[in-house]
Image 1 (cartoon, rainbow, N blue to C red):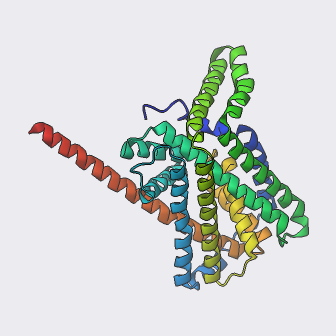
Image 2 (image 1 turned 45 degrees about the vertical axis):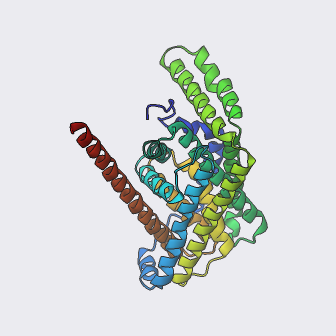
Image 3 (image 1 turned 120 degrees about the horizontal axis):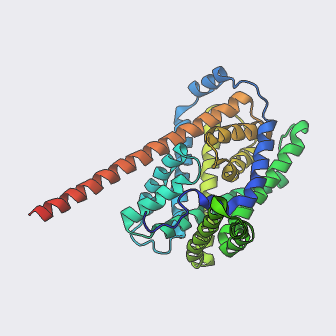
Length: 356
């Protein structure tokens, strides 16, 4: 990735430096609300084994359809999308998901941008900026949905947890919208960085000063790339927002179908809120090792407190979601294997031509 600036080492997270704190507090409040009881795995096993597997598979397929919508959301924000099909981009997104499971931080975005460059000869910086824009639009959309449901729906939250969950929803919504705003207006990000780490970098000497100065440069480089995508205009952002909404709804419908297959009758607005809140809060979890477990605990807590599920039912839903994501990881691995094989085959042909 020779043409990528110094944002490779996780500096893209600086986009959300301020608003991440709000999201992190929201995650903490929600996880504290989760009672430390051992998950009832025997009951979970019964729910899964006695499920209607036709409905369960249909639910998982509906959830998986959301990944296609995520890829199209990304494609809407690519300035030069000629030759990049949505299904090919879905494989690239699933490949990036593999990296996100293995490495904390936005490693998946970097890997996906690299694959776009290698496979379609597009600038990796622009592909990365479009990916980050798309991701933050998705976070903002999820945050708005979570906030609306928290205000409009009569959630079955126990009285002792009302204040914690309401504050968590508010913080997650504000955090997600803040990240989306910084993505849409990167000049604000540069000003914030210049007034904080940039100013400190000029005043401090030694390694700390150099590190802060390099951090500010990384933020500026990222802002330039984000600005290139931003010039696409309102229509591209509107289309990306629509596909983000469809992606969220697809996963929600899939979870609802999966619940029906196991005989679970949740409060449906709580299911949508739980998924959207967990999605919007991922910016506060992605930077830490074990973030996948944190996401599971977060989703379980919200399913119990806002959708009226029992601990066994909530964990059964999480197991189904993880099984569906395993299918996406397998798809990503298959795409990488096919891409690697094709690349090596092209190199062999090129070597053969040179030999002749």
